[in-house]
Image (cartoon, rainbow, N blue to C red; front, side, top):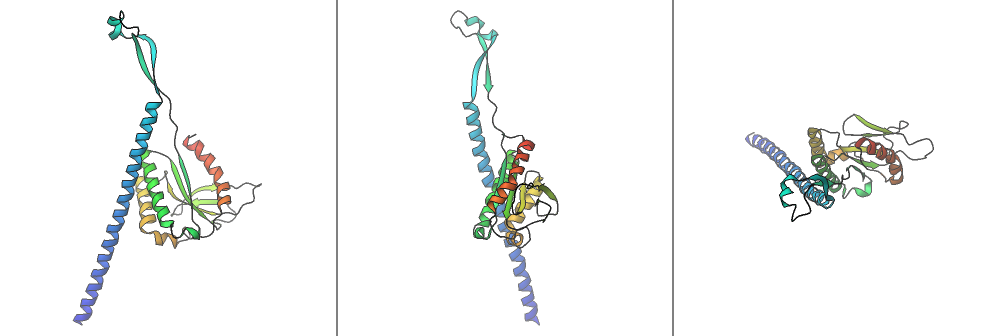
Length: 231
């Protein structure tokens, strides 16, 4: 009896230790995502500052600079100057991830990098939508519904009457419409519970309907260009 109790205790202790280990590993992965996103943000800000500096021009305003009037005998330039900055481009990101069976060996890496990109866009203030696509009609006869892991319908795409396409399954895994808490929760689920995701109807892998997905997503791209006000 003492042996059985001891074995039960050890099993319970091992399960607790395993949970702690998994939790620690999950925390390290999320920390790595945040760290990589910050590196991307620093590089993005440096490049943006460099381009802003290169596109900045100094011009005379035609108004006298009172502080320079005393030098009018030796200097011709006694006018105020102004910095003219050309407006930069607005950024937006729309990403499709191949979710076919041939991606199974690298699917986790693809999701991990997508999570880094989503985190970067979130802290940089760049609107984004990241989808997976594969074979299968998510809602037959109702167009294609891109849906997050919950039950909320995000958008319905009408393929049009003159286009003959298969309806691929398009799942919206990351979005700038998510709150910070929702994005963190989704990142945790996609990165630390990846096997659980692939076992659901949202994460089941199939074929690669690339042409069909591209045709269907074209309308989403136009919609997001207007919504995000990007070039």
